[in-house]
Length: 204
Image 1 (tube, rainbow, N blue to C red):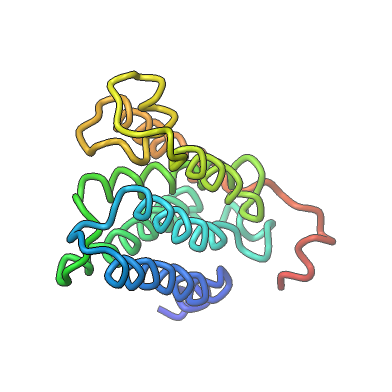
Image 2: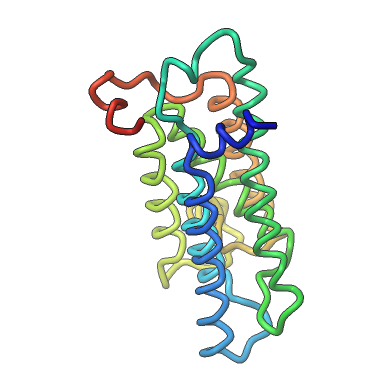
């Protein structure tokens, strides 16, 4: 399985995984220290998930764009597997908090927000490359956690602030599902755009 080690190293996965883990642990420590609630609130959880997703989103492109598009490798399957693995890792790290007194829950909200934000990041990668894939999830998350937005029955509000809506909110769930599926398909089928050789040389 040497190719897996080479693949993970070329994508800087160990570094990204370390950053994602550190963000999740830091948010958990702060919530445990400064709040008495057993559930980490939706705004904190959403910001934490977004930062973890952004960290792993940097791994969606390799250093060699030509290699990432070569016909000798089944890239659509590999890209889809990479994205699904990232979702599983983030969800698993967040779920470890259920063993403690401060938890990222409910699980449905964790799954929805992780899937939606990863899909949005993957879509950004397919359109603009991994270097800019953080823009959309960061922007949408900052809008969603604005203090004047909250749980609502208004469809427009649910879509704008889908990250902090209750797990059973239909429009919020639909929005996250569309982002997840669209991002997965776009990234798996297209990958990232080819960059000029001058931009990739320094990454190698």
